[in-house]
Amino acid sequence: EEEARWLRLVGRNFEAWGDVLLPAPLSASPSVLIETLVPGAPIGEYINFAAATASAHDPIRGRARQLSVAQRHYIVQRGVDIYYKMLLADNLMHADLHPGNLLFSADGRGGLGTIGMVDLGMTAVLTASEQHNFIGFLQAVGEGDGRA
Image (cartoon, rainbow, N blue to C red; front, side):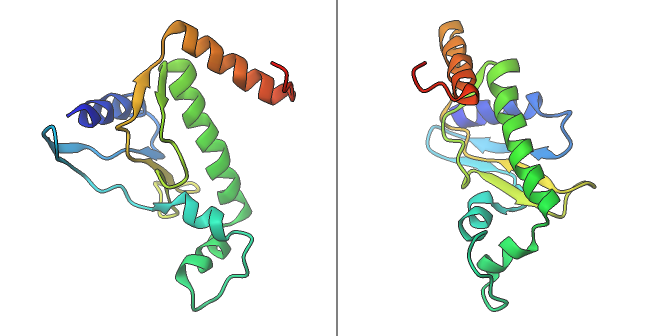
């Protein structure tokens, strides 16, 4: 039930972003969540094999070759956009936002593709102090300031 609540909230927050998809909860109880399917493959499958020698006989390794430079750039930039929007505009933190919980589909709604976000069970509203600290952390990383 809690994850269904987060899916609805974050889904509304990204509603205007036609290239960012979230599953819609269909039914939820304390122990079971049934949701719609978000198209795509985990971004981790592209990342893990991007540097590997692709084989025409290996569909997973072959995915890395199928991404254009523009698609790779899109995935990185849109992932950053998603993270910053959640943190700065929506005051939320998806605490499990890793490459397995982001899906990419090249069969997108025009453009370079779509990115799907799944597994929002560990999402939280940030306190003002937490948001301030995350912003400071990101600023320090951007400036290469390891002491901050």
